[in-house]
Amino acid sequence: MKEEELTIIRESTSDDINAVLDIERRAFGKDKEAELVSELLHDPSAVPRLSLLASIDGRCVGHILFTAVTVTGSENTITASILAPLAILPDMQSRGIGGELIKEGLRSLKASGVGLVFVLGHPDYYPRFGFQPAGRLGLDAPYPIPEEHANAWMVQELTVGVIRTIDGRIQCADSLNRPEHWRE
Image (tube, rainbow, N blue to C red; front, side):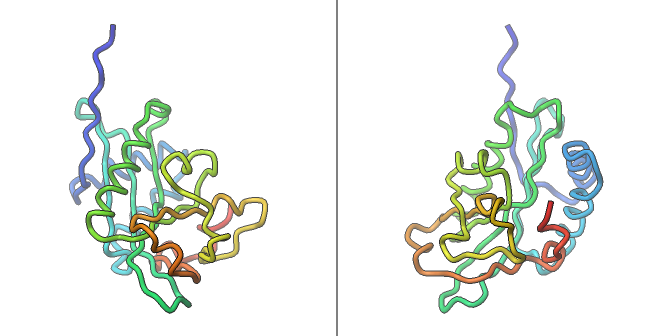
């Protein structure tokens, strides 16, 4: 019988950049997400950001990044973030590591006063962690999402009741606020 593996989740540091970018490249099988993460980690408009690294037995196996967003066109203001991206090494997927990273990230963001978290992601995955379609709530993505993928643009309320008080278009960090990051 195999011993239970303990996943350690911690904030990444500048010393972790190579491990983070390696996870992004291997998880997605290309450089696009690694390049985006590198840009976001150096983009002043992405602050405040939260970069978490998951490791098992000293091996870095997963990474998640949350960066600041603003909601434009709303009378009310709120502190908000976007989850982009979440990456798990291919041989470590389907073990709950992504879920652990999401939960820890949301817990940390809530504790720091973030009221809303957005994600453009798989509509069958993220709702398990409390995300719901954002467009029908009046919270539009930075670029139009085709109707057939509308449920992929999601939000989670970390401050109870705030979702009913705000609407508008999301503006991301400069590195993420480009059309190529918003289409398949």
